[in-house]
Length: 383
Image (cartoon, rainbow, N blue to C red; front, side, top):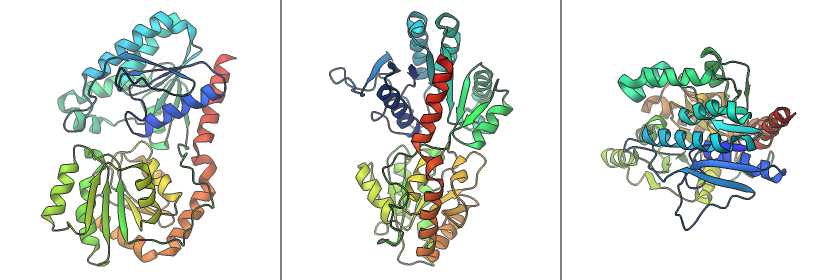
């Protein structure tokens, strides 16, 4: 088996990084021979040690993002060339090549080398961007990005998506063959019935994630300020780091909320766990999500979430309004504040319904279930 992604957890942190590391470790534990192609992100003197997985750097260490938090163009091109060179030389040793759709050049390379390697191509589509979002992201070059994405969708492949939103977009792009929706990426160590919905809760609204434009971290600050008009005891925590953290700090100062909203930057996973466990709610004002794992992680701790109704936001599929959270109409301070207030006023009742929602959906949301389905597709490929 050959996994292809230009990032590797924990050198970069995100849902896709965790997914591919988990896939690799699961396959290795089952006795498969697993290779992971990526860009080098580590010091040469400290190579990665992923149990049972052969990690191969097919490109040098490069900055993946620009100052605004957008993907740079050169690293995907270099990675795609490295993947192509590796698979042209060694593709015949693999039964299956399993790649992320994005960045697309590595997928195109794997499809091109398939004739020489004879392997089956499996592709994960964490997101499928709309024409409008491509224009917003790349400006005049947005049409080129959309065309490359459409080309990749039409390649012969075994496709997986992680939401109905992006599965449907993939079909509309002309996907050849079906797409399987994997609902489970949760492997947080808290099982159904283990969270105590009546545990100590602090009147805190928490954001946890990268501070990049689409996640709208700065929107949490004025939302907490507005919600305090009805819930004076409310505080905010904006966890994480990224190019928009400076804007978060600026808004805290501008609105005079230094003693109300904290933004400590990147913190240890134990700190995030504690914050989610005792928060009144998670606030995820993101307008673009391929899945929204943090919503499930919050629900596992009986903590409801606020998400935003937006055409590019698949996280809304994980929230049943009024049960395990609230779907706000927009990321405006007024709409986010109203959603926060609804959750705070619902109190223990919504925490209990959130815990019940998690217990009911635990199996389909679990990483184990998704990995079972992926492993079954591999066995089908070999047979």
